[in-house]
Image 1 (cartoon, helix red, strand yellow):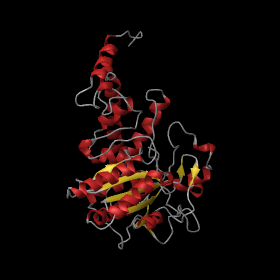
Image 2 (image 1 turned 90 degrees about the vertical axis):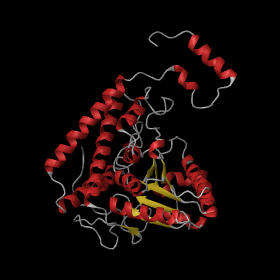
Image 3 (image 1 turned 60 degrees about the vertical axis):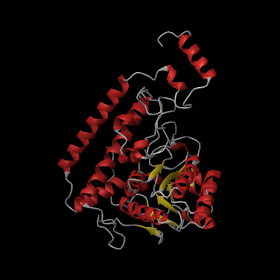
Length: 381
């Protein structure tokens, strides 16, 4: 598992959507591993260790899935390298009854909320045990039991879905909030405007969680907006915003927990901007060297969220090298087992393409299903 351990140094200079040293950015984790008492969310030590273990799982899983794609064993992967704290910290801050509406990098949040590693791996291989039954590309998963919505590729669609879900819950007087994830690039979509405007007017219990990772594929932040931040965009909709260091899991946890409490109280929704950085390509289909400088990447590697949390654990004497080795061995074994099972599981049956749309399939789909099953097959199928 690749983790940089050099003490972090905040990148950026003047106030901008990428400068984590701006005075309005919430930071908790100090360079020496201690916590700022003014913003300390007071997470129990055992819970902090659990968060660290999950960050390591997500990082190792990311690295393994890239290898599997390069080997041709899976077709695609869109990871969260460098953004783990923003994703896991926010998911951990959500209450059990809250719903998460993902973008497509939040597999770590789904696993944290209860989706099994095997279920996720089944989706990566698109086999018959895949919750999506192989109908979508890898990393387009869902887990209703974990209160984790379905992923779709069109940018921003989950934003209006999360707002509508929250509005329905408010009308039914259910105690829940929705947390919707999106990248800074999605703020240029009509879905962002529609969702924010509706949420502001009807005061839905929604937290808009923007992962500002610096790049919308090959479009840098400075070509995405002229605003001083993405959180400030909430002003136009009557929605308060807060910025945090997205590579500081304590800061992410605190601002998300506070935002959920604020939104669920019936006041107004909130927008959280977690300032982080995508260390890898946009996906396994992308080569980031074509559009960004390696020096920029190296600068952010010094702020690796896993290394920063590890430094805190070591300061508190909650972690050591033996525990690290044991953890990595355990995670490696779990991943290998999940891959082996997923690869051996057969592909979805052809007739499943007709399922999960109608409770009672109409006559013409029944005829098509029968014709498909009775028709010829290519060799090997």
